[in-house]
Image (cartoon, rainbow, N blue to C red; front, side, top):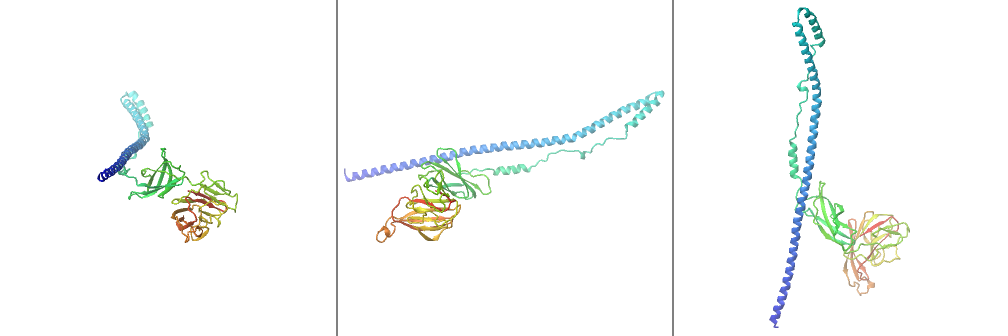
Length: 444
C-alpha cells in the first residue's frame, strides 16, 4: 500500500473514531434532554396535584367555617325572637281576656236596659256591681315599639375584600427552588453536603437537609439550622444516598420547595477507635471514645483501629464532654501506633493539647490555638509537599525525606506548618490521650 493510501486509511480511521465519539456525546446529550424533560413534566404534574389538593382542602375548610358561622347567627336570631315574643304573647292573652270580659259586660248592660220595669232595678244593680268588680279603668301596659327588639343583620362587606386580597397573594408557583445542593464530598463513613441560595430575592432564616438510601422511599431529617453545610455520618460505604435541602424564609413558618435531589456516596470506611484499650470505653460504632476512671492519673494513648487517615481528607475531633485538663493531654495524627507512650507529644506525631498548645514531633510550636472545651471541634488537614529527601546529604537521619503540610484548626483559628517524616507513608493513625476521666471525643 502506498504512503498516500496509508495516510488516507489512517485519516479515515481517525474520522470514524471522531464520528463515534461525536455520536456518543450527542447520545449523552439526548439522554440529558430526556432527563430534563422528565423533570419538567414530572414536577409540573406533582405541582398541579399539590395545588388542586391544597385548594380543595381550603374550599372545604372555608365552606365549613362559613356554614358554622351562619348556623350560629341563625340560632342567635331564633333565641332573640323566642325571648322577645314570649312576653308579648302573655300580654296578648291578658288583653284578649279583658276584651272578652268587656263584651260579656256590655251584653249584660244592654240586656238590663232593655228589660221590663219590674226586673230593671235588680238587673241594673247587678250590672253596676259587676262593673265595679271588673275595674274598667285598669288597662294592661303594652310596650312601645322602640322598647321591643327589631332584629337586623350587620353584614361586614370588608371580609370579602380582605379575603379576595389574601387569596390573590396565597401560594405561588416557583420554577426553581430557592436553594440547591452545591457539593457532595465523601468523608469516612459519611458525606459532607454543601448547599447555597440561588434566589437573590429569597432571604433564608433556616435550612433543612434530608437524606435517604437509594432503595428507600422515606427521607429523614439530617439537619435543621442556619449553616450551609453538614456532615451526614453513619452511611454505609459504596451505597447510593439521595440528599435534598429546603429553606424557611425570614418571618415565615412554611418550608420552601425541595431542591433537586442529588446522589452521593462514600467509598471510605468510617474512622474507628481501637477497642480493648485500658482507660477508655467506646460507643457501639467505635467512633466515640470516653476516658473512664479505671486508671486515673495514668493515661495512655488510644489509637485508631487502623491507619485510616489519608492526605487530602479532613479529620475532625468533636469534644462532647470534658474532664480535668493535663499538659500531657493530646489529640492528633501519627505515623505509627506506639503503645509505650502516654501522649502524642512525641516523635513522628503532630497534636494539639487541651490547653491549645501545638506539638510537632514532640516540640511545642510558638503558635497556639484556643483551649479545648466541651463543644470544641479540632480539624486536621494534610497534603503532600515533598516525596524526596530534603537533607543536604540525602541521609534520612539528618532530616525528613517526606514532607506534609499540616493545617490544624480549632475554633476560628488555625495553624499551618510542614511536618517532616523519615519515611513515606500512605496512611496515618490518629489518636488521643487524656490523663483524667470525663473526656469524650467523637472522630469523623
